Amino acid sequence: MKVCSLFSGIGGIDLGFIQAGFEIVWANEKDPAACKTYRHNFGDDVLVEGDIKKISADIIPDFDVLAAGFPCQPFSIAGKQCGFDDRRGNLFFEITRIIDAKRPKVVFLENVPNLIEHDDGRTFLVIFNSLAQFGYDVYYKVMLANEYGDVPQARKRIYIVAVHESLGVQYSHPEKIDLIDSVDDIVDRSDRKEDYYYYKNGSFLDKLKGIVNNKKIIYRMFDSSPKSLKSGLCPTLTASMGMYDNSVPVLIDDYGIRMLTLRECLDFQGFPSEFSFPSDVTLKEAYKQIGNSVCVPVVKRIGQQISEILKPQTITEEFLVMNWNSFRFIDLFAGIGGIRLGFEHVGGHCVFSSEFDEDACKTYEANFGEHPSGDITKIDAKDIPDFDILLGGFPCQAFSIIGKKEGFANETCGTLFFDIERILKAKRPPAFMLENVRNLTAHDGGNTFRVIKTHLEALGYHVYAKVLNALDFGVPQKRERIIIVGFIDDVDFEFPEPIDESKRKTLSDILEKKVDKKYFVRDEIRKSRLERLKDKGYPKPYISHENIAGTITPHPYSSALRAGASANYILINDERRPTERELLRIQGFPESFKIVLPYGKIKKQTGNSVAVPMIKAVAEEMIKSLKAYTNKEAN
Image (tube, rainbow, N blue to C red; front, side, top):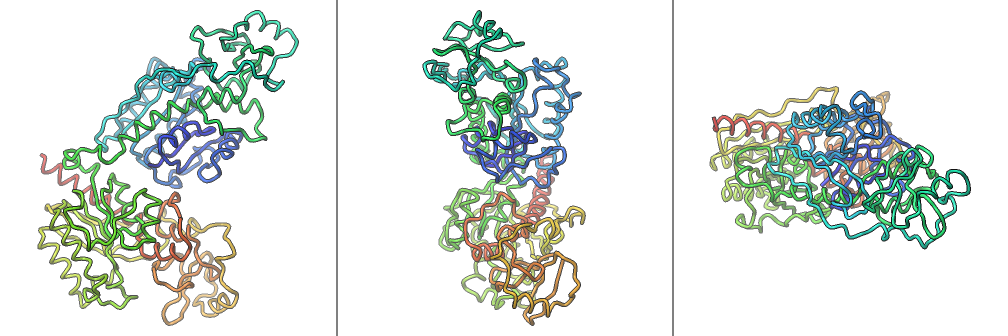
């Protein structure tokens, strides 16, 4: 389960979700000092530093949960309470912009409790209604860290969880738990800290001595004056600790009066012991970052509750039948999961996958957390869970122009269509989608396709088929494939239209800027390619394709990736081969897709896969058509 983290700070929310079993796939933070701390603890893979207002939602990979502790100062009692009139308050609408573009399953928001009361409740009403407008059921609760996170800090925050109605589930916030850890478990008053934490001689120390005299209390600093809490808890840690002098909570230990240390503050926020600050972050910056962060254990518990509702088995069978906001599918001839990605995008939950190639299974497992079942010819249909849509990119080599075109005479690949037929006959799902090479329509004078269509119609399915080109759906690859869609009911269906050219990615969008020298071809290969290049003045970047006759043709896009192509089948600017990540981008895979095998195997796997955005477009039209049919029948 994947999380997009906005206003990430030093990663407190991210840590909570990671501890709950989620993966952070993209994070954003504007403050440079906070970014240093984030990278110091999480690495440099997911964090994008910069103003979220200047970042397009298109660059954010797909995710399940949007998490954001958006700036609370505009709503805080301690601040000016300007709300949406404060430029930081308006950042909430950047959240809604990304929600509108990405439509995550769940939205998690954290803020100060005064958010509910601000502007006589109108501010919270705007937030609530904005989420509801996008189809979310909104759940909110004010929680104390000591009551919900087993952390002895009097930190009260509102936590908002919005669950998209398409999931058909209800969310419940965690219940209170007993506080086990005490202040003394975090603060060791017999251990002398670094000198800079202690107040030295002076009038301010004299002022403190008159009040800070109880070793059982941590004193809150307000307007440079210490205040004691009757609860015996650590006061709420705030960003002001790093913004104003004498704002860090104080205590008295065996050596004098001092501030809470950075480590103690981190512990009172529930950060793990290994979390630390880089050497070039100042003491004030570090205090501010801790105060701006969250109580990690509370977020973890909320994350665990969210994880429960995202599990596919929580979707009831009645809901799956009654509407198509969520549905079950099986992924046959799964490859590395390209078709799966397309149908997950529209609310699908995979309940079974099958793939014969073990290397493909390794990549699939690394990205989806499950190892596909093996040879589909050896799997009894009754052992496959019930599902709503069958998906299959059944082997195309038997019908490909590049292959021997043996069709059904190829006993290894060609006859696997009949295993699809066998499963459809046994399970009778409402719909299916199959993908193959465009030559399937022409193979054996059209007879092969007629056999397939006739067999599907004999099972009672209404069958639609069309050749689509990946170029028309946003990836820089000319990849023509036939898509076969079928419905058990008389569903009115139309294939997706090409997207506007302004929304399509170009080679410049997907090519890496820094490329290892191992991808570059030898000089003699490069010179030979350039000599045979049809248009020697063709503008860069381009991808050239070497055909069977040896002619080199440049294009502003890639030719169709092929599993069995030669090493130099396509070259970028006739200089180098595409990298593993570029091959995945050419097929439209998300940036978060993991690469776990060597180049040669990734090259084969991407060549065998599908253009994910094209599959997404087909999936969207299928679900739209199924919803329309269901609504029509219901009325």
